[in-house]
Image 1 (cartoon, rainbow, N blue to C red):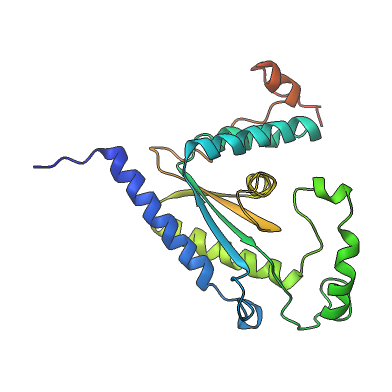
Image 2 (cartoon, rainbow, N blue to C red):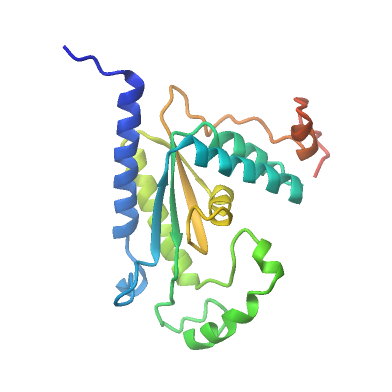
Length: 219
């Protein structure tokens, strides 16, 4: 009789579910039913990362970013990133508007938006988490895709968390190509690692290795 190791079973299961989540994201409804231009890749990108080296790089970037912008939430996300089994990134890559001329972006037509968009890509914008502007309908498409993927994970009892800061880390490190993305972090443990997380500490405290709780009056 062959006895399968429990952890191996969980690892195989979560990888299979992550693939099904990626399928759900790709088949989710899109504005106008458009997914890709003839001869080009789909504008919805899905990338699964499960190696500890890359997850460690993401965590390191999050800590560096947290210290730079004085935001302790980056440190909390870094700790979670080091604990997850894998991350499914879902994002918008080389996207284009559905040409509805809906005006949600603030421009009268999609062509006006496309002509104006390059002016927003200035030198300081390279340091942003995500470069903008991005078509609002495509942002809706991304949200629907992420929701579809999270639904599949939930139906298979996989613990998940939708995280934008982790996706920003992946973009800056070249793990994904997307301009805008969401990280669907996935885990299988006896208790959901994404809940009951302690309040984030001050960046300076974390860097110094201190464990005291965050001051109530600290911004």
